[in-house]
Length: 174
Image (cartoon, rainbow, N blue to C red):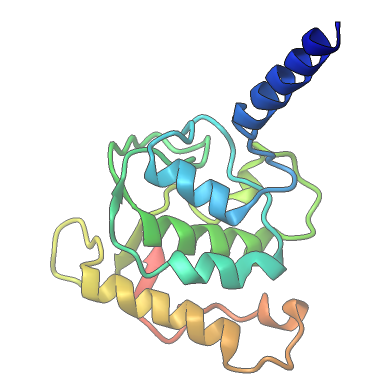
């Protein structure tokens, strides 16, 4: 009987330890979110997670990464379909979402949570037909967000959120 109880406890412990941790939209982990994005496991039909201002530094750590990802949540009002995204660009868009919508009363799928129709950074001064940012231009966007967050650490988030990180660039969200 003791062996059966011990075997059952060991088996249950193993099952619990091996189960995937479910991603929590209301209390998201930046690292888990990024892992799901990189592995192509994040369901693009899921809403943009409700990250908080204190998670911006963690998002910035990965936001200068140009690797392609296959799935990312987009604004439900968007009629555009993208089959490939850039990780850093999507993370900057996520930071922009925190900046423009944090503290507002919105649902997970509310368009107000999305800073634009798509997580696509464009260069308004570009002569390219789609004006999509190059890797170098995307790095400038990353630098603008990095500077916005770290330039004056005495500023509260409420002060920071009223500053558009891209204001001094030719970059904007599509």
